[in-house]
Length: 399
Image (cartoon, rainbow, N blue to C red; front, top):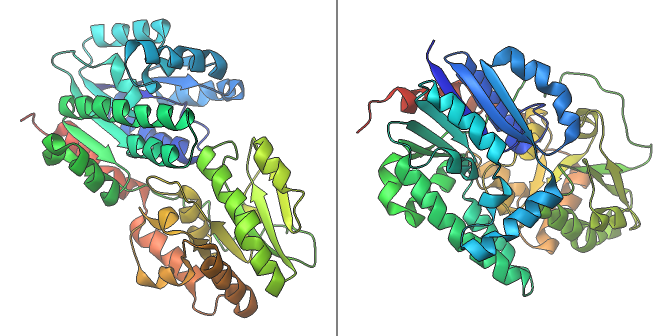
């Protein structure tokens, strides 16, 4: 087997959140074809317990601890150097030495997951680089700037511009610049037209055996309510904004018509703003749970009211895989292979989204959108099928 270097900004195990799900399956796919040297940062010390699983998969492994407070201090040094703040956030001398050692052994194939990791391999002749950008992160920072006050808005606008400039440089050095969906790839082609010819995408996948609606789970909800569930990491800014908006703007309208409606926010590390929502009528905040599947399986519907979003929402795909109808905004559905029938539960304003919710609670899933979602995931979101283009880009002869 040929050797390959894979650099990931966050340890790809356990695959229990968006980016880690994608990076884990990318790693699994690559280890079936190459001897993989994996380098990744670890921002949760508990994840070091999973090093054994990764060592068994890889030819060599470097897991570098990342202290968020120190990383933020490094990041703001970028204001002095003029670079995107994301770069010093993920900069580490020890990690760089490990990368140098792997490349010194003659490893030429490199896959980077998240563009900030490309700083370790740029400007090195002879590398066959494929970059999985996942999302157009610069546009995410642009969206953040639009909803923040100064000085945060200025910092976010600056990051959007500087990160885009860096991403264009990375794309130019890559034989493939890959994204999570065709809409993300199309946006990057507009922003970086010089890289349009080698900008592509591969869809995420879903473990449909794990997220199986036929599995029986004990009901985690108290009797007497009609639960609507949101799942995700609850310290992530876009998720915080989503649940706050739904709890404050949408749910009161729903409960006026359906008093037994309940909004359950299920996910780890709930921010203070999320914890405060638990004081509102009909809102419950669980914090981390051992398994989100019982909460999805026994919910009347999954809710994905994201107003700031990039790429594909795994929470939506997983709910669809479990045959649950999904109430969502346009942004939450934006990277998913479209089907006009799903639009019956999509709205971007509070009143129409509440109306969709009320109708669903009153009539149930009479349109069969849950079953359609399961069939849609089975048809379009198989990991091995969706990852095949990565092997094609790696093996393609350089232009």
